Length: 146
Image (spheres, one colour):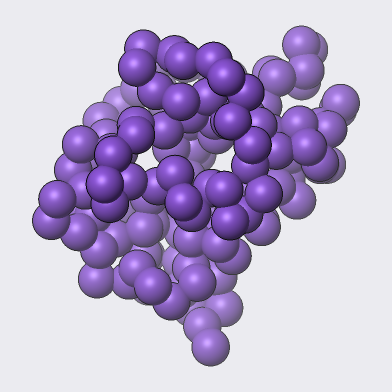
């Protein structure tokens, strides 16, 4: 079983991370990594990492990380289509949850997802996220108590 780690995206790794893509039909559920990285550079509270399986980049995570509020929002989670179904997303989320727990007031992780067939809703519910009843720009808002 591959070791999953979250690593900084560097000048040496950015092209490989940007080249990762979700499975066909999933494009409407998560932005491309290149867009996410660009957005992160304009949001001072963005915390983002590449997901690695051993030494291979397989995905991407991005967190809105505001310890002053405290507010922690899983902004992006993607695992490349060719690497899905191996538990990498769950293990990457485990690492992200550990990170949030280590932050000031890190007792809740919120996120949202685009509803639809082949979307990530089932993944998040199986992980333990609960729907809040809120919608944000057509996305279902979820929360995970930590």
